[in-house]
Length: 460
Length: 152
Image 1 (cartoon, rainbow over the protein chains, first blue to last red):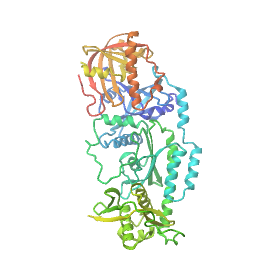
Image 2 (cartoon, each protein chain N blue to C red; image 1 turned 90 degrees about the vertical axis):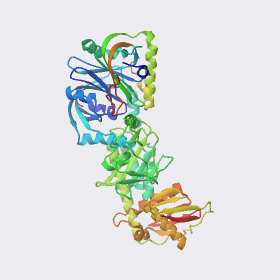
Image 3 (tube, rainbow over the protein chains, first blue to last red; image 1 turned 180 degrees about the vertical axis):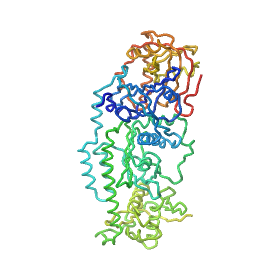
Image 4 (cartoon, chains in turn red, green; image 1 turned 90 degrees about the horizontal axis):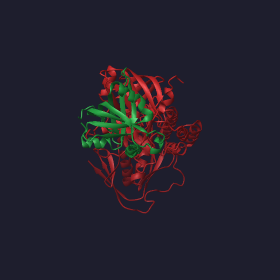
């Protein structure tokens, strides 16, 4: 440990509890202001976020002496750090890390591009002392750390066992999210995979949300998942609510920034009031396989020291997901074996409930069921093809291979992601129109099951 | 300097910090537990725990320069009062309910942003020293483009 002991105070640098920043102008006028964030740089330096021109910043340019007070969210012990302004950075690792966090919060509030980091101001820490009026609770700290110390080797091993046991992509994704809850206690999570359009992610599996949100799209740079995808770095936000309040206090509103949800868009799943978020890029040899996002209503759920464990977990999950995708794609490309014995004719296997109207909108390439948006893009075109084949030829059995060979679907020759699109379509149908089901029938085959009559309508 | 609306905000039970500086222009700061605005709006009194008042009081007696930051955690509405030290005295027992009331208001604010009140239980909030400051300026500090704008 260094003489200052700054490295033992990393919990203080989460932005959960506002920090106080004291400076003094060259003419001797003191200044006191709240700070959104103090970042740990190394054992003798911290970085303060510079978002707006203000008096504090002018003061340190004239007189480098400063004092910042931070509070440890585990113990509530207040600490006073005597600082000396060194320099401002507008690029590099420290700047990128701080900017990413601020932009993730801004993006969440619809303020991206407006509420951003101008510079990371680097300060030398000259002394660290306890604040006498804010003594802490060491007992609480130990208990909380024990409760939150979830990323143990044993837990990671248990997760690995669970993941290795999974068969098929769908089962794997569900096992990952179930494992995150059962083993680590994360009750709200989601996995997004690269979307059909470049620069987008599509929600493929979620857990813990009333609205499952499968099919919801996030653009790169939008929200925590989009920010993770863009930066290809994990983002951990403790005290998200505080950050959002700070952003809102900047007097902008998402509507005023001109942001509006596009037509036919599935809302992103998520907690109404997330207090902590953790987004992890799922990378294999630099390729983005997907993004894992975990949320919590507990303000300080994810600790700095968890980050490495989460990254390790992320790379392991990324390989598992990529393997499952490749395996299913290989199976779906080959000539299918004979259909599983005993498979029943599926169409109309249940008594009809009510007639569903399935409309395909050519301009948007999207499908609506009874006027409600279901899905768009390739999954929409696949559904149209399957229903047409059923109407005209009475078919209920299909293969991935025939979809792959169908020119009308315009699948890319390289990495068509057909299996993930089929999974997406299946899950959207399960959620929004369970009367139409796609049931896997083994090795690149699936069955169309209809529990209600439908009318297929083409619209311009 | 401070109208009734602003006075109500300063006294509603929010985060308060007193900033000072020493002869070497090095800043000092302490948490205040409560504040009271004079009827004429020309002076404020901030109540600083005795355990914390030493360094800031020494600065104030040395050069008189004071800055008091007020912020409401739930919406980050904030302002800063600049002023000159007038006097200091021990807070009286009669003032304790007012001080305690404002502190409870602040703890309620912390609860809104997810920090439970019991976690700050060990913080020392009494006895206090009442530091009287003559107000010379008030600035907005709500984050955003208007931060730093002079209010009076």
